[in-house]
Amino acid sequence: MEGLRRGAGGGGALGAWLGRLVGPLMRDPRGLRGYALGLALGLLPCGLLYGALAAAAGAGSAARGALAMAAFTLGTVPALVGVGWLGAFFGRRWLPTLRLLIVPVMLFNAAVLLILAWRAVS
Image 1: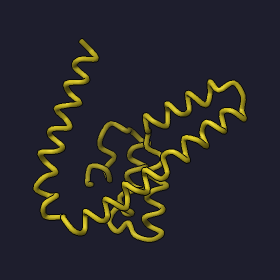
Image 2 (image 1 turned 180 degrees about the vertical axis):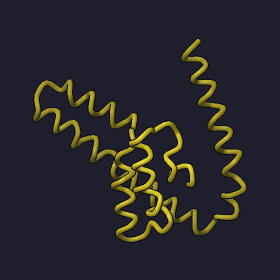
Image 3 (image 1 turned 45 degrees about the horizontal axis):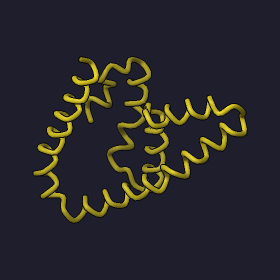
């Protein structure tokens, strides 16, 4: 979190600004602070959103583009709410176990992504 507050990660001035904005909100993300955190994190780039924006831009008209973005929203909101609820549920009940599992799971994820990236480049 300290790196986020300092704007680490190559984000430059925008990253530093976002880090200063989000850092205090991450300390206690409940209620309106959690809502504000969600709004601030909405400024981060998202590959799925970029794909939906490209599809909407190529839809042929503003109305079709708006419909494509509405469909994207309706499709992602339930999944995001579900992930949030499940995260809160499992985080409260199984935090000690999750702390033990998170490192191997993240290392496995990194290895899979590295292999996929290697295959895509070579």
